[in-house]
Length: 126
Image: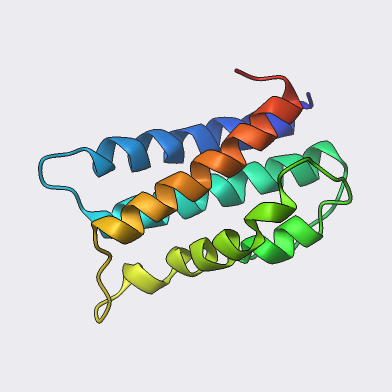
């Protein structure tokens, strides 16, 4: 694995830890859960692109990143709809007017977990 890929994975894992920790906190902030779950997925997709020498633009659009990957991973395409919903969490709950609930937090964690597992398996990580 390339050094830059490892850096993306480390950043993704930081977001993963924050999302999971916040999800089970006594006073969970589900906006933060959704944001960090989205960021985890985004960074794992970018790690995959970096590892495959695919240049990408700055974007939070997870489906766009999935379509840019140039490599096929078993199970990744089945996440397309969930990834489209997760993409919105990069911005939706960051500003007044919208608030995430437990249900959105759980879906965000589940989607990020599925993507994370597929890409980590591809990289040979536990």
